[in-house]
Length: 482
Image: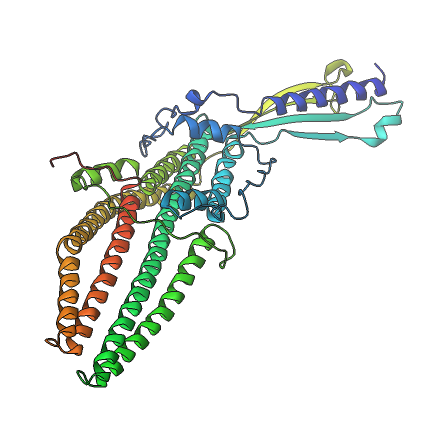
C-alpha cells in the first residue's frame, strides 16, 4: 500500500472511531435503571450511604433536558384580565397572579436549569484523538511514511456517573419544590392584598354612612338650637365629627390605592390599573383538628420536600466522594508506523489502558469529611424545618380560630348592642332626655366597632391564607358535629 493510501485508511479509521465514541457517549439507561443506586463502595474506609431514589417524573424531565433549547416565553393572558369582572373574588385574583406573576417564571427557569445539569453530569468525557508524523519520511525512498494516530476514551469507575446523576436529579427535584413553595407564597400574598382592598372599601362605606348620619344629627341640633332647646355647641360638635370623617376618608383612599397597586403588581400590571370592587368575604367552614393539619403539612409542604431532596443530594455526593478512592480507566487504540519489528515489518495497531493512582489520600479524605459535614447539616436543616412547620401550623391554626370566634362575637353580640345603643340615644336626644354629646359618643362607638368588625373579617381572611400556606394547600373543613 502506498503512503497516500495509508493516510486515507488512517483518516477513515480515526473518523469512524471518533463517531463511534460520540455515539456511545449518550446515556441510554431507562429511568428505572437511573434510580438504582450502585452497590457498596469497594473501600473499607467508610460504608457508602443509601441514597433515596428520586421520583420518576423528575428523572424523566432531567434525562430529556436539552441545554441548547431555550424555553419559549410563557403567554401571560390579556392585558387586563379582571377588568370585565363584576367583582373581584379570591379565586379570580389567585388565577391571574399565578398566570402572570414573573416570580414563577424566574423559579421555573431555575428549575429547568437545574434539570439540564443531569445530562452534563452523567456524560462521558469527549474522546481524544492525537496524530503524530515525521514529515521528512513522507518523501523518503529509504523509509516508509512514519505516522501515529491514537484514539482514547476515559471511563469513570463503575458507579460514579450514576451517583453524579443522583446528585443532579435530587437538586433538580429541590428546585422544582421551590417553584411550588413560591406558588404558595404568591397565593397567600394575593389573598392578603385582596383582604386589604376589601377592608378599605368597607371602611369607606362605613365612613360615608356615618357622615350622612352625622349630617342628620346636625340638622336636628340646628332645629333644636333655633327653637332654644339646645345650645350651639351641639352643632359645633357635629361639625367636628364630620371633619374627622373627612380625615378618615382621606386615609381610606390612600389605603385603597395601595391595595390596588399591590394586587396589580402581583398580577404584573401597572399599579394604577382599574379593578372591580372586591367580593364579600364569606365565613369559612370550621377548622379541623390541628394534629390533622400538622400531618397534612408534613406530607405536602414543598419546602420540607425540597430539604429532603437536598439531603438526598448530599448523601449521593458523599457516596461519590468515597468512590474517588477507586481509579478511573482510560482505554486507547493506536496505529503506529514509526517503529518496525524484525524483518522491517511496522508495529502498526496497538491497544492499551491508563489509570490514575488514587494515592492523594489527604485530598480525598478532605472531600469525604466535607461531604459528611454537608449531610449532617442538611439532616439538621430538615429536622429544624420540620419543627418550624409544626409550629407555623399550630400558630396559624390558633390565629385563624381566634378570628373566627371574634367574627361570631361581633355578629351576634357587639354590633347589635351598638346599633341599639345609637337608636336609644337618638330617640332620647329628640325628646330632650339625652344630651348631644351622649348621642355623638354612641355613634362614634358604633362606627368604631363596625370598623373593627370589618378589620376582623379581613384579618380572618388573611389568617386563613396564612394557614393554607402553612399546611401547604387548601385547609379541609371539619366534619359536622366536631
